[in-house]
Length: 237
Image (cartoon, rainbow, N blue to C red):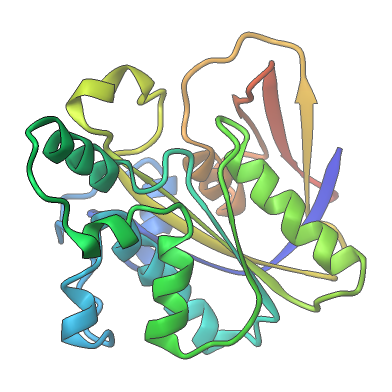
């Protein structure tokens, strides 16, 4: 069981860039696309050109949280990481073509965390997590542990999902093709609870589930775990 409080949140998808749009989405409205990728006008142009789509997603939600909250530590998380970049490197190897040093350096799992640190200038501690279908929950667990152990007042979790390369499409198990969610965990009274339960692991996006419960569209929802399912519910009224 994991009990936690969320002090702030930020999300991005091609059809929703602000809280009002996400409220409409949570109410069941189908929203048209408004952008194919985050603009990130605040990032230096030379650095911005290096960013993969996944890194863009992460920076897009991290920056507003950093501006609104005093973040003591960051946890960046994605199930598959920079797989698009890694696959292209493997294709180049198979073709006996030279590898791009820049692409190689940006293919690691903590790419988003490192680039956000560079772009924003923050020196707060950062962690990068990948834990299969439990990635989002393990990132929250890391944040809650830091807060409950009094190592931090506020910890931001930045989680992103993107479309996988075609040859790995079978591993796109319900994750959204383009979605980032950032939440700030603090020491307030617990508002949410996560429990792992027995059950069939159906497909689903943990970020979408979190948003629907966070925005009041549902009081309780389930999403897949590595073994069984995770039940996310609101605590109290």
